[in-house]
Length: 83
Image (cartoon, rainbow, N blue to C red; front, side, top):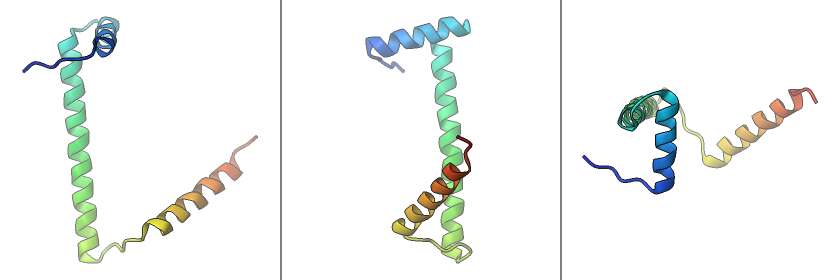
């Protein structure tokens, strides 16, 4: 398989590999494996949450309500922060 990068990305990759004392291909392979693992974990979590909603174990809320709750939590945390 061949992967082509822009010159800027290629330079960053080569610098990262030099800094780590590794080959660029190793850095890319580690990144792809990490991304795959993260996506697999996310997929499992989403499947589990979907099953919980389908079974009625968890009730969904609409987007406006979710946003309101998020803003309340954000405001409360900002109020607790020392100046």
